[in-house]
Length: 326
Image 1 (spheres, rainbow, N blue to C red):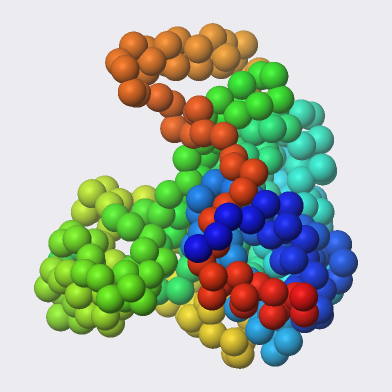
Image 2: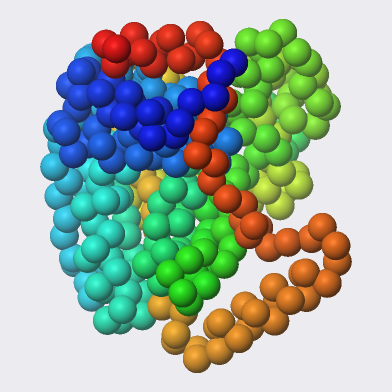
C-alpha cells in the first residue's frame, strides 16, 4: 500500500471515466466525488467504485453524456430528471438554482429521479452547507435489509446525511450514515479479507445472527437500533423513491453489476435557510460549547481535515492506472 496525492487520484479518475465514455464535465465531477471520498478515508465510496463506473459507462447502464432536465413545479420545489446519468452531475446542475430558491423562499426541495447511485451522500450535503444552507439528504439502494424479526429483504442501507453551515462559508457539523448498523461495503471487504464480522451486523438467510460475511451477504443487514433504525430506513425509502420517481429498493438491481438496467434511483435533498429563526447560529454555538465540555467529545464532522495524500492498495492503484490507460 502506497500513499498518493489526492490530486493525482482525481486526475487519473477523470482520465479513466473519459476513456470509458463520460463527457469531460461529467468525468471531472465524478472524479471530484471520488477524490472527496478518498481524502476523507471513505474508500468504499471512492476508488472502490471506479471500476464499476467505467464498466457501466461502457455497457450503457449509466449515461455518461446525460444532461439533466430540471423543472420548478412549485415555488420551493425542483424536480430533477437525471436521465439515467450520474446523481452527482444532476445535483451539480441543480444546486445553483436550489440555492436561489432557498434564499428566496427559505426552503428548497430537490428531488432527483432516474439517477445512478450517489455513493457518499455527505458529498452533497457538505456542498449545501458551504453555500450557507442547512442540508438534509436521503437515498435508497438495492435491497439488503429485512424488517426486525423478519428475513425478507425490503429496503437498502438507505443512508441519511445532514450538514449545518457555520455562517462563515464552512461546515459546523455533518454526518453521513447508513440506517443499518454498518454499511454493506464493510461486509464485502471483510469477505474479501477472509475475516469474520462482529455479531449484530447481520443475519443469515434464515434470520439468525451471524459472524460469517458470506452468510451475511446471503442474508440481511441489521437496522441500527432495531426498530428505531428500521423507521429511519423506511423514511429514507419513502422520501427517496416516493418523492423522486425512483425505484423502490425491492426493484433495484445489484449496483455494481457491469450490465443490466439503469439503477433508476432517487435522491432527495432539503435546503433550509438558517436565518429563518434569527437564532440558529446562537443555538449552534451553545450546543457546540456544551459538547466540547468533555475532553474528546466533538460535534460530528468537526475537527476532521481532509488529507492531501491517501494510501491506496497496490492492486487498486494498478487497476486505476489500467482504467486510465496510464
